[in-house]
Amino acid sequence: MRMRKDLTEALKWHGQKQNVTAIRDPTIKQKASNREKIVEIIVNQARNLRIAGAGVGRRPQPFFSYRFYTFDDITSNMMTGENPAFDHRKQFKCDETTQFIQYMKKDTLKIDFIDESVDLT
Image 1 (cartoon, rainbow, N blue to C red):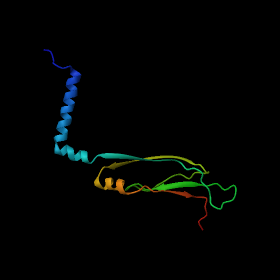
Image 2: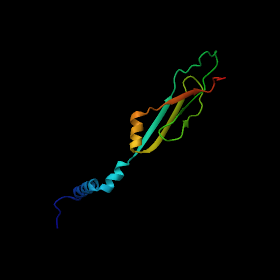
Image 3: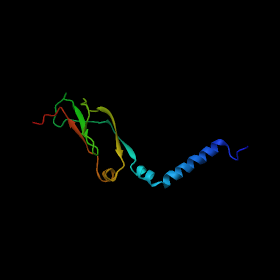
Image 4: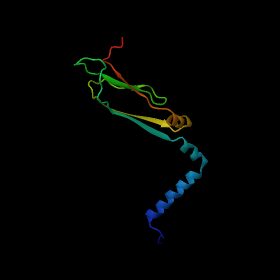
């Protein structure tokens, strides 16, 4: 017996049929609406940092901190110099809920840079 189509084409059509069946199934649709998203925050480098009113020889000791969505605060290691390379990369896995979508549309990511070498007293 000879097939009308070769095996690769038959498998392709079978896969497409399964996708159509999955789209029509309401239980699968509910799961697909709660997809997981990965958000990545990258802080590469700060440039030309200066200490206001500082004399010659004082170098900044910066670090940064931020909070994303419902996750805990993230704080970097302290660096030294006017052009510190933080090379920070952090990934967050988030369910694509209505709350997450609203956060991404309306909120702003605020990254605070702090200089440890400055005396605040």
